[in-house]
Figure 1 (cartoon, helix red, strand yellow):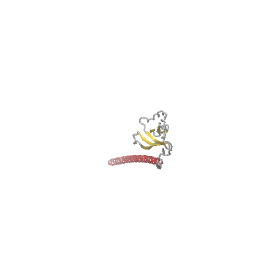
Figure 2: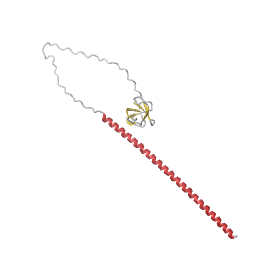
Figure 3: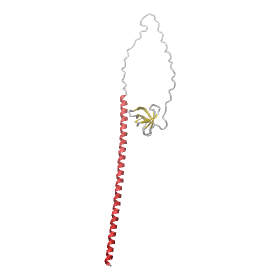
Figure 4: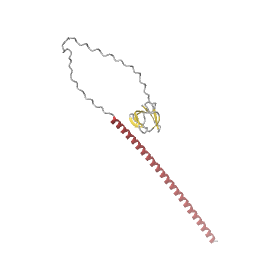
Length: 193
């Protein structure tokens, strides 16, 4: 009887030990799975951070390129303006009046007639210049670029100083002519002054 009880106790101990091993394996598997998920989340967050930094760097590079392009365009515009050459000043030789030196009668030449009054046609009043709609920045001294963008001096924009030279993104719609509003592909609107 004691042997049977001892055998039964040994079997019970073995069963409990097997159950404890099984529980330990299950906990280890769960911990491993949690660590893998945490590593995956960290890798994903790092990948997103790197992508955001890359996007910021590209935006900054694009902005610098646009500024450099605008500066080159302004420099080229200044260089293309013809420099005013000073016209040589002709020296005048003194004149001598010959009236009364030739002899003959002492009649004084009649005074020249006063000039006729100028007749000027009345010009019709110039048509009133169109003004930009409220909230739409104005581009002055603008030119259309080969890529469909427009460069010019901006005014009335909360993002730029008045008079700053900018280049828009490509124009998506609107008539590209003075006095009209155009819209870029990104949705920005500009009044062409």
